[in-house]
Image 1: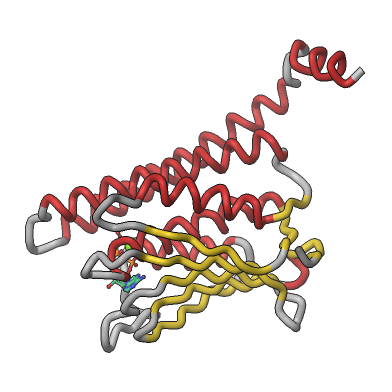
Image 2 (image 1 turned 60 degrees about the horizontal axis):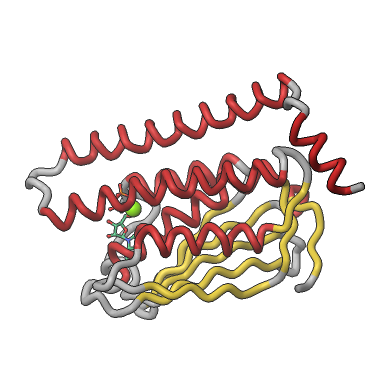
Length: 230
Ligand SMILES: Nc1ncnc2c1ncn2[C@@H]1O[C@H](COP(=O)(O)OP(=O)(O)OP(=O)(O)O)[C@@H](O)[C@H]1O
Ligand SMILES: [Mg+2]
């Protein structure tokens, strides 16, 4: 019975509005990628010194990681649909694995530890959340361990006492440079992270110590559809 159902659903064409919706989403994602690359091109233009080979490699790796994250996200959407509520945790794990594959190298190894609960979120919040995760990973690869010590990232999803869902992404590196004003300074990454958090009504906080940098995104309680312990 299942086989017949599966076969017939595979054979029947997708409704035109679903195809249009999928194309619309893909077009939006590609536009987002293009604007990120353009912003990067503007910031390269403003740099007083030419980039080194290592800088160029890191920039290209970052672009590849962002493209990979978006493609991963469309894979998730193709399985889950664009509406409704999903458990964020497996998606964070899947996207983190893809980021490790895209960004790690023999010189800079990465291990990711996932902690927390099964957090239920609206499907439309998944894209901004995984893109914030992507920016935090790219930054950690670039700055956390200047001496290329293996990097440990921790991704935690939990529900705070006030009912807000909190995603925390931490590295075990050196933290922000001394005197760095995260509110005023920063490049493309921080700007993108802030605007993605704002897009979903979330609040982005950074906590930097000599033991590493943590990004926390707290989603308003109303934006969460419920959570159950893992
Ligand atoms: N994980 C981290 N550990 C230590 N310092 C960091 C970390 N993430 C960011 N920083 C510091 O914060 C600065 C701003 O980061 P941001 O992502 O906004 O810009 P960028 O990475 O320099 O450039 P871009 O994101 O445009 O490629 C970085 O230049 C770096 O000095
Ligand atoms: Mg960055």
